[in-house]
Image 1 (tube, helix red, strand yellow):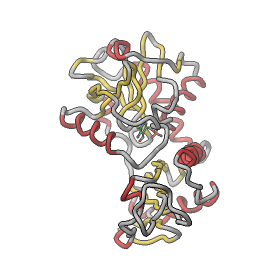
Image 2 (cartoon, helix red, strand yellow):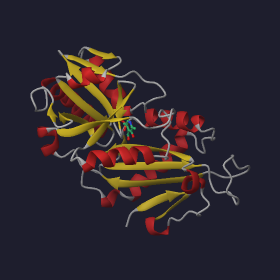
Image 3 (cartoon, helix red, strand yellow):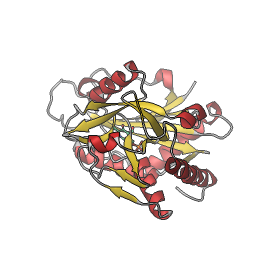
Image 4 (cartoon, protein in one colour):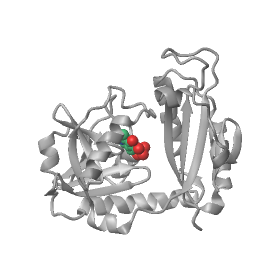
Length: 292
Ligand SMILES: Cc1ncc(COP(=O)(O)O)c(C=O)c1O
């Protein structure tokens, strides 16, 4: 049975209950983070905590904890659930902060309400080699989401509906298009490779600033691979030699079929192979404690 953190206590998941008046439940009024931990070490924690702070600022909710307190909570949680993980102790942490529970249901912010703070952790495994060897299918869909997609809000119904359309069409991800431009996936960021250049859309309120996206850009720069943050039109996406989707739990996944048509050569491309090598080396250095 896994242990979770809820409002100051580490308790069995079965005992973790919140009131039905919680604003996360009633309004989706909360934010979250997903943070992998390799060998018990939280991957890019400072980046995740900075994004959490930005999300909290975006919904005008005070951060209930300092960075040091967050680290202590999450490290303790990982330790509690260590026995459930594989020998390598790879886990993924989910944390959520909502505006708490008020007696009366009212859209406007309640006064003197204590936020609800929840965190859980679960074992994770490396991405399935069958997926990384063959790549995955994706479809394109209109981006129907709101205008604050840089806030990692728990209000994920549009993303859920978009992802389900992908699943219904035997695809792993929906790549979202707004005004003719590629934005991101339903739960991932998007890269394309054209003539050896790695391209990804620039950050802005229309997309979530992915921690994996930033790391991929950092690794490209460090290893002098040509890369650029730029607009990617739908046509450019369809003409790409390679398409990748990135996220903390899925890492970097090659898309080899887009809208039922082959991407590039139809198999994971050479630039992806180079980049995933750098990514795996970096991940190993986090496990060894030589990088964050
Ligand atoms: C909409 C969206 N974009 C991008 C990402 C990738 O972000 P990260 O690399 O921080 O996991 C996610 C992650 O879940 C997401 O939900």
